[in-house]
Image (cartoon, rainbow, N blue to C red; front, side):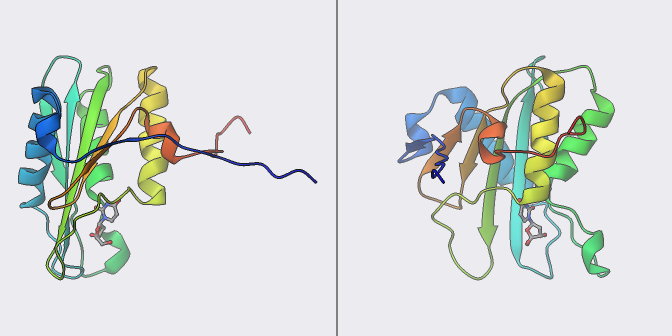
Length: 159
Ligand code: THU
């Protein structure tokens, strides 16, 4: 037996003010999108914003349902919209911002497993790394250089 260790690297910035304008703009767009979340059941609002290689910014938010599993996370709401409408464009970065009715979130939250899978597939389809920018309602920002960092040993159809 030999132990196998996995490490992931990310960059933590104390505040969005440390980031270039393009990243700050995506964080602000994600925060604005989060205000359009429909989350009456969880009280957890997530906004996502991505930039395409033509410079355009697109946003989405989590949408819940009375028929509980029918709702969808912000990341997949946005990705499925963009992948269906702009299938030939590259996604150059995505920001994900969350807030909760219950507590002030001061630590970036990472996407759920299902969203990681779809993020990874979007990255693979585009053929270049998809950086993720994560933030809570306030506090530090985490930047992961590639969505694949959140998804080691992914399921692949060729397996
Ligand atoms: N949620 C997201 O939008 N993204 C995630 O990655 C995790 C969870 C949403 C789903 C649900 O509406 C609420 O947050 C609580 O789970």
